[in-house]
Length: 428
Image (tube, rainbow, N blue to C red):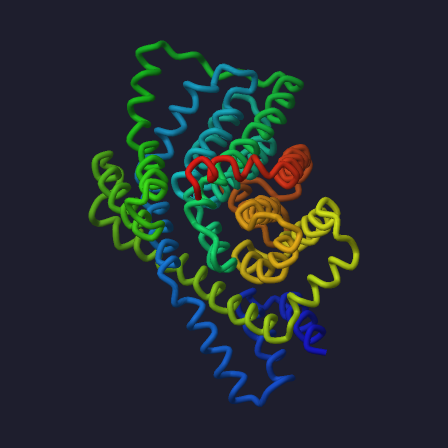
């Protein structure tokens, strides 16, 4: 009965347009009311929501969001795009490659797929249109490649997974995300290259050695942030939360040096950061409340037992979990999906001997696909808005890129060394 109420109330609330954070909280309370009296039910949910936010690791999220806002408005995107042109601009369909590589770099530095889609798409889409690229193709490239920033560290969603999983090292997750993120980018480039060759899209003009060195020099300060943040965490100089604060100071100084951000711009940037952070935090709070309710009602144990009765074959169970998460990702944002489904599926995969770090990368990569699909794909909406194109025109050119992302997901799922090799090098 409790499971039925939880699922039905959540689905009905979403269907009638209730925001997802409120849908999660209300369905959790309704489920609790079946088991205990109203006052204890409301008190318990409120306590669990507050306790869920009482985590030092979560302080990293607003700092990384602020760093992303500063990067978005601080001239970093344009310098990364110029750097990407030097590296991949001469290939067939060079501007598509530039779009992908710039999104990988910017997404990795900012930790936000939406920021990458907005910053890189806003610059690259008009450039690609001028060179004769189809607008829908340019938007599809930008939308899918922006999600790589959720896998390549620093990534807010990996911090959320670490919280939901309980005892998984954020540093290990950050290191584990590099190779899978690069794999996704390479596969997207292959699709973009084949399409560009078939449609005879132009290459970007070549640059001389002197100009190439200048663009590399301009991009080095932005790229150095990755070394500072990840290097500091891996070397043990600071925690992920401390690294996020250092990232804010670094990006603020850089934006001031570039003269792209002025003192008068800071209140607006801070307001945008607070707005985004509040959305993330209320999702985390209500999701933690629902996670506790599911644990109280033994739902994870029931799901685990059910899955293991279907099969105890690692390959089959991972395939089933991936299919479920792909379906979930279509209708639910990444943060609540990670917080709700990690406690459900993590016991199953650990029972089968799968490393929690590996599973975290699988889960985040899987849910990245949902960011590009209607009806709740935030990156899809931002990418289409920036490209000034309707969603229905983008769906067809998106399909080959979806296939590339799914191929990457299967490789990452069944080749654990891809995720675990780098953490093992640093004994994490």
